[in-house]
Amino acid sequence: MTPTRFAHYQTLAPVVLCFLAALASAPTMAADEPGAEPEQATEVDVKAEKPPEAKSGVGDAEVPAEEKESAKEEASTAVESDDVVTPDPEWAAKGAFTEPPVKGPYAKDFVMMGEFTGSRQATDGTMQPIGLQLRVIGENQFEARTHLGGLPGAETYDSETRVLSGRRSDATLVLSGDSVAYFVTADRCTIVDAQAQLVGELKRVQRVSPTLGATPPEGAIVVFDGTGTDEFVFGNMTSDGLLEQGASIKALVQDFDLHLEFRLPFMPAAEGQKRGNSGLYLHGRYECQVLDSFGGPKVFNGLGSLYRMREPDLNMAFPPLSWQTYDVRFTAARFNADGSKRRNARLTSWVNGQTVQDDVEVKSKTGAGKEEEAIPLPILLQDHNDPVRYRNIWLVDRGILPGVEFPIMASE
Image (cartoon, rainbow, N blue to C red):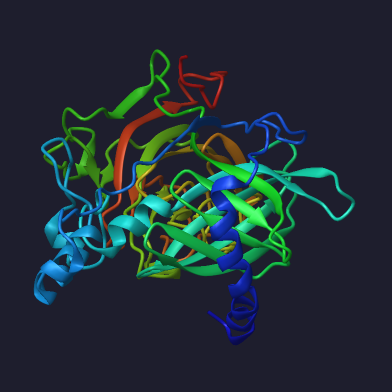
């Protein structure tokens, strides 16, 4: 937290105490307040369950200090059950959770992370739609971005954002960095002004990409459906039928449409390029970046970017451990008989159903890509030493199947 934000947080402390005392009796805003436009991605209302609290059944005077301390530790962890999938311990030891954490502070942090939509009172008294994305940046530490008009991808989305920060205290998080304070719990976000007046309320949502689960058209190359890795030059499958990062697709295609689904690990202590990094190397030369960019700015090396060449039009990243989609329409570069390039490659790409690169001319290789030449190379799912998982991968060879509608929306 910067000194400026810390000072602002201190000035809000009396408001925090006043608001928490009055929270139970505060009026709840109607769900149909004006300005709450629907997102283009499907939204699912989520009411996350709070971890159960430890109950001793006796007064503090009857409990030894050691037992009280143990009870506090137990109360701060989520409880494992038979139907909970635990994270891979080897990756968790490296700070990369392949499943939601079930113990320790990060278990509660994970529950708080996510997206919220609703409305906030403007200075003129009108209600404006607003979206909030909340990400974990360390133990009990959070950063958030507010978006006027709703979340990225909404019809009313406005690119104006504000960055907030805060720390979690048990099951409540207070965000500062604005003229108002944001109080976040597992299922909602309440906004109050400096006079402790309720000026906005947001609900937690879980968006789903409209292309998630898209069925390949007839004649498409089914690269991966969870049954094996025969369509890869090399590739490894997990015990639960997912594809690991580092796979190379066997089919060599010139112009193609590619659909795949990916899940990024939860890496709360990592930042930037060390946070859920992979990539789609088209023809082994041009990288469409795969990265946990949730809740961050759109940058030239973030999710949806043409790596270090062009930032995405929108940062459409969903929270880590969500299933997300990448759809790419690629037209290869063309060459002359003497090896000189005649025409640059072009691509359009969609992340979670929204266009992030629109018929972009690709003038050269990107990053660590292979040098351009007339010979096509395999599509590579980059291994950047993070446990990124893939599923439902298919290709349409447009030289054989021209005119196929793309991207394909998932069936209702």
